[in-house]
Image (cartoon, rainbow, N blue to C red; front, side, top):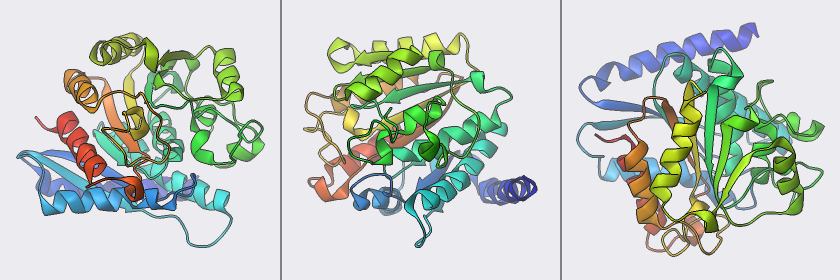
Length: 309
């Protein structure tokens, strides 16, 4: 523990120095987790670098600045060990930003990045029941190694975050703090397997399926209002496959019938000023299946809509 605490103090010094030149702008601490190890498409690991390069080519709207921090997995070792090490490092960033009340953005590769992002927020809060999490995804991501049909960890982060992981999955999760089931809302689901659905039903997690949504802005606003009544901070974890593949073709696991991009952008604009929102995580961008950079540009627009004044 002493080593981790020392790392976090050093991390705080670095971030304070980097933020010195953010005066007079909205400076968003941005963590790029350059890994696709948790899913079948390794190209997802390039998402953060591609988005960072996109903003370098054409800077964000006036007043918005992204302060980038990049993390990469070790090149050697067992995959699950490498993921644990990566997500432990990621959790140190989001823990510090939670403690110091810095709004943050996380750009993952595959959605297993949530194991690091939200573990850190949980560690940064006095009590684990103070975090509310909105999971925007076509999938439930609530498998364990006992139920997964694929063996890919990007289909398991919700189970780990709830404290429902098996021993093998627990070894990848970098904390012993968990989200309370009543503080987790899944929105936009339209593809799932029986095993993960059973886990969520047993935990009594609220799920809003895609075909139950008529007004996405109202759905998201209602979710935030529900969580804000009991939670100190609220995070949003966005898997880009929430969006209809016509609008976002560049995702790792596309599912027809998703939320339209315009509806998502309108909803994020409607909720972004809520005082309890602590951060946004975006995952599952696959550049190999993108068309004319359509999804990359949409990811950029999501960031600008959510964070720019």
